[in-house]
Amino acid sequence: MAESKVIENPELRFSAVLMYAASLPGVRVDREAYLRKALARQCSEEQIRRAIEDTPSAAGIPLAVLDKAANDSIAYETSKASALSAAAGLPGLLFLPATLPADTAQYFGHMLRISQKLAYLYSWPDLFSGEDDLDDATKGLLTLFLGVMFGVNRANAAVGKVAEQMARQVAKKLPQKALTQGFVYPVVKKVAGYLGVEMTKQTFAKSLSKAVPVVGAVVSGGLTMATYLPMAKRLKKHLAGLELTSRSPGWVPGEVVDVVDVVDVVVPAGETGAAGAVGAPGSAVAVPGPRAGRGTGWKWPRRSAGQDTDPV
Image (cartoon, rainbow, N blue to C red; front, side, top):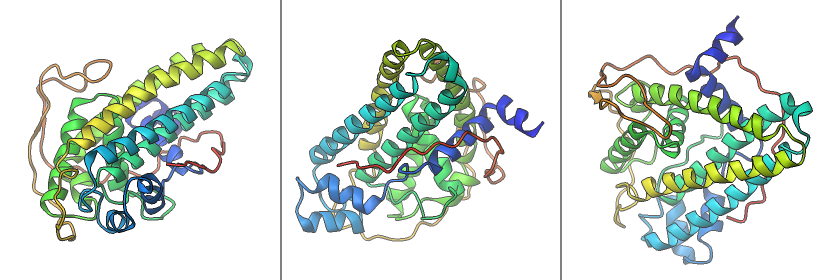
């Protein structure tokens, strides 16, 4: 009964996939190692050291250099996600119950990978604390990042608010309360529900593309490339234009002071995301909500994504 409720509830369904995808081997990106590799050819050792200790923007690294590194990473992740999706389409309809959930998980796993890489290039702090489970703040921010990738307008606004708060307080940590109890949390929940619906649509489309052996591999890989690439570019464009990226060198790092004060988040009437209306038109949310839940109980079949050998 509990599992059926998870499947029927788009928000819980998305949360289950997010948690599972984040647990796959190779999905979590080591910030220091990635920045060192991504910036090695274009930056001095001192710039790289400063970018790791503070942020790339604080190190004075030109936006053109960050954009090139971002484009290289997007190209790499797109090709890898497409190749794995194509491989999942080879067996055809007979093996669909096994290959489809695994393909969905790896697809979202690569979305999480590019989200982390772009965030680190454009001066966001380390998103993972080294723990096995996602903390609620990281889970909320990743949900918003994926919302930006899917074209959800309110996700754009919420990410901008979080970035604005972090830039104003020269923070080196995510604002925990804003993402789990404060003004951003209701938006996170709305975006998670929308993504759950979109995930169902994509799963159905992929199930059709994988029905015919071998031919399904070509169609499935092409579908992944056609959706993943523009979504990654959309997130890149949004993060590159935020205040965090334009922070001038010489800023003094500090600790974030969480904002718990309630601010109205108005959802414009008729707001649309990548594929339709989102939420109730003209609604507004205020009061902080309860803490975001961690587990959902929906289990995906185990599949190892393998260790990554990403050059950037």
